[in-house]
Length: 315
Image (tube, rainbow, N blue to C red; front, side, top):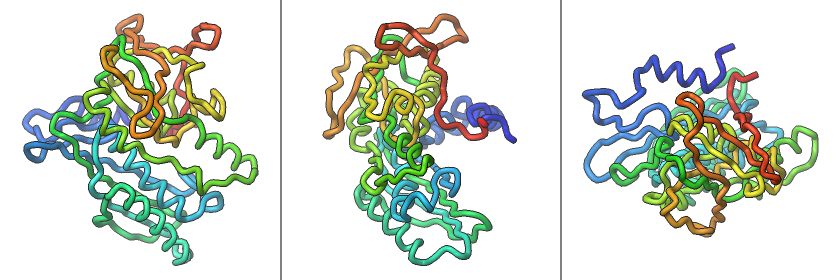
């Protein structure tokens, strides 16, 4: 088995030599390490590029979700990455592999769900590839976005003293998966998350760092803190956690935005109709290599918050 996902990404990153934009290649403003790569292809705006792989049995199950739900969810993943950079999605590409026995009815419903979602955000399906799969359905989405030049919100901009915020509610998707695993009947059609594209664009100039909560708050906050070289404190009572604390901390697939903002910036309680919660603050850490993340419980007691969200190859 490969090493756990976070370590594997860092290993690939070192091998690729993209710890910083490569000398002589100014087109790559930001490579591995954020929700999207940032490319400067011309004056005035930067291009955002992200890819997301959705695999049957890993990211979704056809016996749990209708085809339209799965199609929409595949696109949501990429749109959310663009939102986390403050960008506007403009086009997407789909490479789709299907088992030979997949019914055309299922395929049509998959595309209807995906294309209806694309219409919501005025993003065009612009190409891709079709192949046969020897196992389950595999969908690889690439989303292209744009952001004003130099304005992409990176994971690396958080500073000690910044407030820590999150959009919407946390843990709802993970609670739904837990119920499905337990064999319970769950209404899924009305429970799909919405990528926070409009919120992300409004956060340009407000957010100092940002990431989406696709892998769970505890894991995604570690990504942000590692890239920024900071620690953090999360206040448990402040979390918007309708399904409970554990789901809010470690459950993924909410596709909310987790962001930081300097104390001098006024962050409204709602942006584009979406609730915004202040859930903590960024800290300096206690040693050069030790930038811990803490969880403060309702009594004010501090507990080390370890990343326990989704990570491939983690066992």
